[in-house]
Image (cartoon, rainbow, N blue to C red; front, side, top):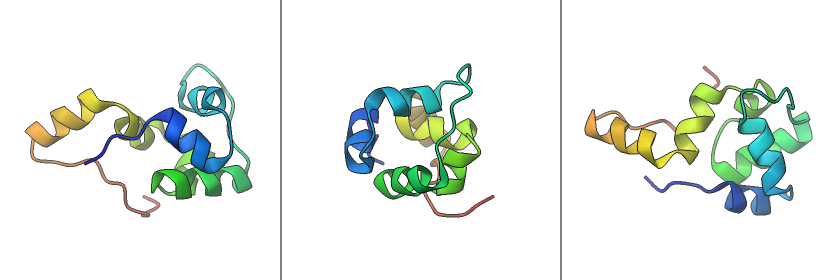
Length: 85
């Protein structure tokens, strides 16, 4: 699985890396609009609902290589599918 960077996702979505960082920060209340969430979802291959709802449990593994490595060692790959669960 390829690890995404905040810079790559931000560039593809047309937002700043700082914006992506703030959305991924559990201590920051910022949530993207639906339009921006759709762009972030498309740029990252994730469900836009994860961005709107700030579902960090699903978003953080995409950007965190250590969590991805741990998941792969446990034979469970973090999902990048479009399911809304």
